[in-house]
Image (tube, rainbow, N blue to C red; front, side, top):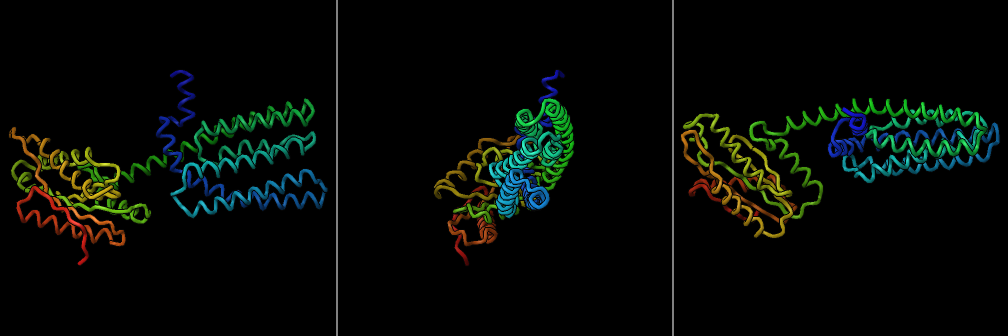
Length: 373
């Protein structure tokens, strides 16, 4: 592995760029909570620090900068306090605004206090900040590096302007050492945190995905539909109950291994056909349910259902005895544009429609609007 590849792996925590950014978004809400908690604490400390300076030293220039920083930190607190109420719905843009405004405010005030406001003293505060801020958030190393380079550049220029050459040289050495320590510590902390996130995601997937077919199990399906309904973004919905016709004969005649392949073949076909506004789950055995929403018009639903039956007819499964078998399915399709109805009531109506189809020939479907009893 060459040095360029080692650097790339370090900057992206050993992940590809897309995956790394996905995990970054997953922990954005937690980083916003960190900003909320620390901004109000720093605002309070800054205000107290200002009062002490005015009472003991009457250093007005530094006091003005500190009180402005405290006010800005309190504004950041108010902004993030409102965001935290949204829980996991915090957008990438909102998370970036929160973190960047917090870091800019912290660096600007500290750099001023450690350079122009400190005379010829060493900038202990700003050097400490180069260790603290990178380790404060679980950011990608590449982002920490960008921030550190910019902050160091501003710090060095400010120190060069405001201090004697010997003090400036000490600031440069201390700043670089603190930045290196902070970034490597941040890398190790983020790596541990992100490994935990990956393990948690894997456990969630194993819990939510039906192990045989690869689609969502009943619990995950119902949870996702509830989430969509509660989001308030759905204008209409379709609930479909699907049952594989005479599946027991496949199991009894060819064995459970063939039965499993039969189910997987069906789920592969339906997964290939599923659109973005459609969720598919396995209810139990050979029963499946489908939730589709925000269709443009009813004819679109009718067209999609008919097209899927054509897809089933064109993609038979090869059985162990060499025969090709078209998977027959019975479906009950119920739709509504009235979002005041509970989707589980519509599911029950779809279940009744399904059994009507099974009692009248199978391998077909009915489509109807939901009418409460």
